[in-house]
Length: 186
Image 1 (cartoon, rainbow, N blue to C red):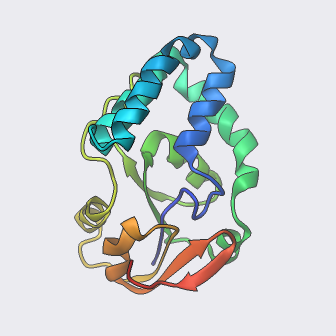
Image 2: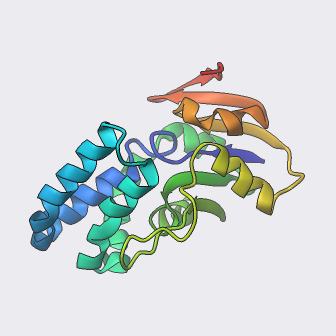
């Protein structure tokens, strides 16, 4: 089985960020929350606010939108951002594991024929997390919870925050733009 990160790996860009700005353009009411979002971002950058708390506050904008409708429209436009290498390496048993919300990543993965998708458990109605952010060691924990004995032949990611997943793979690849480089410990 091959396992992939999603953002900046399969997709050119970060789906959470792209979706935020997509919704911002289409939902004027979100502009009223921009000062709060800015403070949230500064607190995160200053390491005063932990990543999951930052993300939960950011995803609070979901209460202003019809998430199902916006996600569908978003992916109709954004599927063109899928990197060519993925279409060449795709297999039926692929797994995507992402820190982005599962409700956001799953429709794109399904359109690509990927059945196995794990993402952060974010409520699409209000942005609340219903479990840990699927990042770093949490990816391995979630993966092993479903596939305790599975052999990961190839793992692909753009970030060394995924070193824990790379360590359980037979081969790991660092995705830089459209290039695949052998993984080196970060």
